Structures are given as C-alpha cells and as structure tokens.
Length: 560
Ligand SMILES: Nc1ncnc2c1ncn2[C@@H]1O[C@H](COP(=O)(O)OP(=O)(O)OP(=O)(O)O)[C@@H](O)[C@H]1O
Image (cartoon, rainbow, N blue to C red; front, side):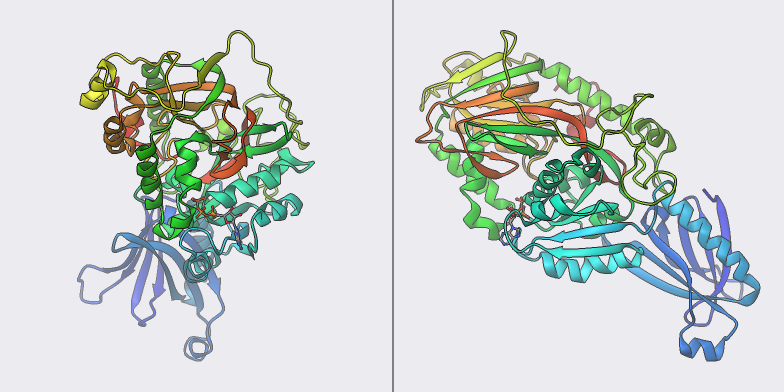
C-alpha cells in the first residue's frame, strides 16, 4: 500500500493540478498560483476507485501537447448520498511520464490489493423480475460502471423461467463472477445450474454477485444492509472488488418424485408460502407485497398440518444469540477500512477469488470451500453426491401439528409476548404438543425481506440451518410482532420456536388443502421433503467477505 504519493498533472481546464494518494484516499487538487490553498476537485476513498490508465491523446490534445500523455481516472464518488461514476482525464507532461506509469501501478495495487482487477463477468439479466426495470438499469448504470473498471462483460438476457439455470449448467468455467440483475430467483437458478454439473464443486467456486432489480432481493439485504439494498452502484462495486463469501447450500429432496433442488436462502411452509406465492400479482408493489401477504395470512390465521423431524444441534435462544454476537465482534476486530482486504482474513479463509497465482481464471484450486482450513486439502472438482432420503433416529425432535385451527385465546405466555416478551429473561423454546403451526421457515442468512430479519442468529457457512416454527398465536401478538420483525427481535417471541439443525424432514398431513411449499421463494408440490446441508460449497461476493452485520448481532452484553 502506498502511504503517500503525488503526481503533478495538467487539468482539463489547462490549470496545474496534483494527484495525491494518502491515507487510503485519492484527491485531485487544482493548484493556485497566488499561494491560496488548492481546490479539491475530487476526493474518493481507494475502495471506490475503479481504474487509472495512460490513454492515447485525443486529436485536439495531440496538436496542442504532442509530447504529453493522457491519464484517465475512473472512480465511484459519493454525491448527494449516493455513489456516482466519475471519469476524469488529465495530462501528464513528458518529464513526469515515467513517474506517472509507476503512479498508475501503485494506485491500482493499492485500490485492489489481493483482488485481481478487470474481472470477467457473466451478467444475467431478468427483464421481468421486480418492477421490470432490469434492462434499463443495466444499460444506464451497471454496464458503464463495469466498463469503467475494465471488466469484460458477457451479458445475456433471460427469456424464460429456468433460463439462467440452463445457461449455468453448460457454461465454460472462464468467468470470475456470475452477476445477476434480478431478484433472488436468478441467484437460485444460477446455483442450481452450477450444482448439477459433473464438475459442480469446481463450478460453485465461481461467486455469484446480485444486482438488486427484483422484489425482495434478500441476498442484497444480507450483503449490503437494509439502507443499501437497492444501491446499484454498490452492487457493481461488489462485482468489481467483492471478496469470496462461502455459503452453505441445502439439498432439498422431494418425495415421492425424487426431485432434488438446492436452496441457498429458505424453505417455507404455511403462511410464508401464501405470503410469497399468493402475492405474485402484486409484483408491481415491490417488497411491500410481502407485508400485504402477511396481513392477509394473519386474517386467516390457519394452522399447517404437518410433521417435522429436526436434527437439532442448538435450541437455547440466549446461547444462539450470544454465539452470533460473539462472531460479529470477532469479525469487527478484523475489519479493514480503506482500500479493501485484510491479508490476515485472506490467509485464513483462502478467500482469493483471482485464479491462483497466475491470474488465469476464477476457479482457484487452492481456495478450499467445503474442506476449508485443512493443510492436506485436495480440491474436489467432481459432482455433488446424489441425495438420499434421510433416516432420523431417536435423537431427532419431532413436532407434529394436526389441527387446522388452534385456540389462540390469550394465555399467560401470549399476554407476556404482547406486553413485552422482548424483555423477559426466560425463553420458552420447547415445543409443546397440541399447538398449531402458523408457519415453518428454514433459512440460511439473517434477512428474508427488509422488514423481516427472520433468522437474526444465522451465521454464514456454519453448516447449520436456522429453523423457525411459529405457532399459531393471537392475531394481535402477530400484528405487534411486525414491528419487532425488521430488527430481528421477533426472535424472542415465545410463540416463535427457533432451532439450529443440520438436517430436517417436513411431511405434509393435509395434501388437499396445502399442496405446496417453497424453496427460495419458488413453489413445489409438497408431499414430504428431506433437507441436509453442504457446508461452504458455494460462494457469493461481498465487500468485506461477510454478510452485513445487523444491529441485532452488534448489541453487546445483552441477552435480549
Ligand atoms: N424472460 C422471462 N420471462 C418470464 N420469467 C422469467 C424470465 N426470465 C426470468 N424469469 C423468471 O422470473 C422469476 C422471478 O425472478 P426474480 O427473482 O429475478 O424476481 P422477483 O421474484 O421479482 O424477485 P425476488 O426473488 O427478489 O422476490 C424467476 O422464476 C425467473 O425464472
């Protein structure tokens, strides 16, 4: 990292200027002749800097300054609370050309550190996701930024459902990143396409980086936080400079069809299915459609008839919250400000996305995914083994709900929830037979929508599925819970049973009235499904190699 380096230049207005790099920032200064302080034309952190290069002079410049060189500078810069692409060019006089060449090398390596610049990107665009604006967003914002960073972009617009899956099943593994201008649907399809290949384990090393043009965009919430969920330039920066974030995939085996799908986000039964699938016609509303669906579901307040078998690893809510907070604190200690990456984390996690030492491609044989951390690791480039029905033993927890309506009269526990279970020291996470299930929701990352952090203690790549069994509760409890949902405090509701599991089975006990369940928001016929986990087998990109740290996990020394 360069600590301080200045380069004298001539600015576009023929005035003298200075490019200065200090403390992880680039400043473009206009110098004055009369001793006044320099005027700052641009000031940007190197983490937002995209590219510097010496370019040929334009013809009008050639006639005026034939021996000068042109230096182009591309960056994202903060303007009016948003990131904008800024392109500047300045002139370098002959006496400074050798210095300028060195300056370019230095600023590029300080801005990218261990990340290889000029990534090769497969960009998949879903023209109908969300509000249907992906194509214009891509042309107006995404492509200009990627091109300004020198990325090589291969763009394909999807023409039908599952098209992204067909594409990724057959692509050459020549890309550094697969970017999706879509919602979560295309990410799901990309991962499913990669996961069924004979070289799945190698293919899944190519990271997926979403551009938020869908409805819920759950992945973007988890990567960029609630405030920046729809920040398109930030999602582009992630494609350009993001670091590998290994994630688990769930294998979901549907019986009796024996169809197997892979899930990176969620599987749902009950109210959460109606909320997603039952509101497809409200796509124009953006993510507000999910709140509308939730309220509609509460009005019906019906119970799902099912049998759940859970291989529980952890069920103490206080303990699970403590671990998630501890992990967040550990991450914070290693966080880097400024230019980007932390070599310590890079070393530990082998997070280099740059194709080994020769920079020849995305898939780095040394970057272990599932077997991360073993010295004698030999990369496995083969397929993912076939799914088999799970065989629960007596240690598994069985939860059964057979009633379609359950009494939701206020008992003590409900009143406590309503009046502030959030501050109660006790948490009653044990399931009691005879209760109705409003919904079952299994997830892999904290947020599922901006107003619902359903799994606040989820830890990326821990090999565990966070499972919520929400029992039927008085409507007022659930309506009040909406307020506690955005920041994850719904977790403490006594009616919300929460487990970390390594596998589970969900059997349908009323196929006629509840024919479907969802995997990552996609509907499937539900008879029974068996789910287990492939730890850290796939990859996303994120700016610091982690999910966005929520306020929930940043709370210190608090049990609730
Ligand atoms: N050209 C197309 N015509 C019709 N459907 C398409 C086309 N391209 C993709 N799809 C389908 O659109 C569906 C929705 O995609 P996507 O996830 O991008 O948007 P969304 O559902 O609005 O967002 P989110 O998943 O974040 O809620 C996916 O199932 C995908 O297969």
